[in-house]
Length: 166
Image 1: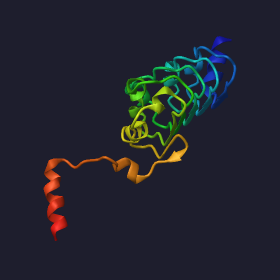
Image 2: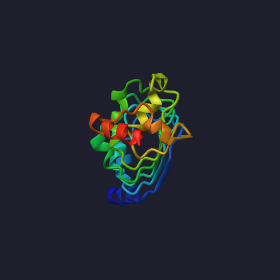
Image 3: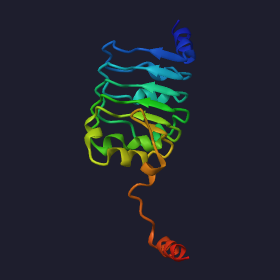
């Protein structure tokens, strides 16, 4: 009987477990085929078990009590993850989220309504640390945002001065 339920978990493609007062994700790592996961508005503090769900494309974790995200090596296993909703959580420092840089195909991320989103240069730092991002907090990332405050290494500055003089 146990093996049957384990096989059923392996085949699940989508879960919707929002607003259920969940505090842990013990069995979710068994959902190896999971593509879409809604876990919004619970009491989750840790999401390490989700790192086993390597086929995830969309992950909604908004409105939980997450402070610290897993490190970059964990996120690097989620090669298909494109959409990640983390707004209305408790991340307050860059160290809390720096692991997201390992998520190489992430195209849309939300982190608004977190203590971190109130920090100076929040948006600029994020768009320049997660290169695949196309949208942050429901706004498209412009080319100007990426290169804003960017300075050329000294070896290229001479070349730029020469080009301007011609």
